[in-house]
Length: 133
Ligand SMILES: CC(C)(COP(=O)(O)OP(=O)(O)OC[C@H]1O[C@@H](n2cnc3c(N)ncnc32)[C@H](O)[C@@H]1OP(=O)(O)O)[C@@H](O)C(=O)NCCC(=O)NCCS
Image (cartoon, rainbow, N blue to C red; front, side, top):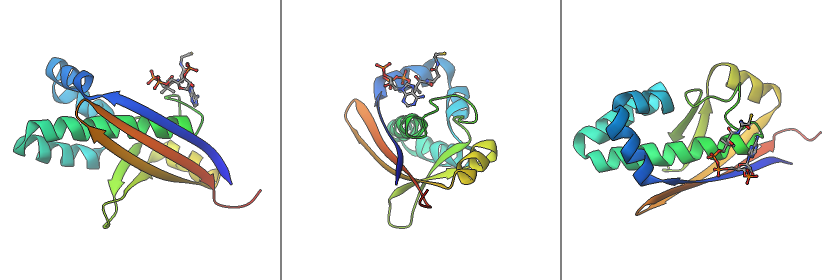
């Protein structure tokens, strides 16, 4: 059964501006530890890829926050919601800390899709209940 859906569109130019203004601190605020390592590797090789990576993570986390109905309110936090990549390339959500406990206690499962094109990154998230009520 569907628990919730969430969508978000992120202006890549805003992410670029925030990174220029706040530097790595901005990435540290938004990205989980595993994501931060990927972001650093991509940014070192090609800064634009780092910006796009950050923008898609930003939109995915906001879409997830809407799908669970909390928005950016506890236990939902940027860093406790990690976007990982499955071997097939498909993105997936890995949760940490209190958010993970909250999500598991409710028996939820998330499905995520992300995309980006020129100035925008967008995500769509579906959260379903694993067990029937
Ligand atoms: C959900 C949230 C992350 C989106 O913020 P944003 O990126 O600035 O705005 P977006 O345009 O992407 O999304 C806004 C839409 O999210 C939806 N939304 C808001 N809160 C939501 C929630 N708890 N669950 C699901 N969707 C929500 C609404 O439809 C809203 O559009 P509307 O205001 O026209 O009705 C943010 O609003 C949030 O964290 N809300 C929870 C905390 C809160 O409400 N704080 C302010 C009042 S105390």
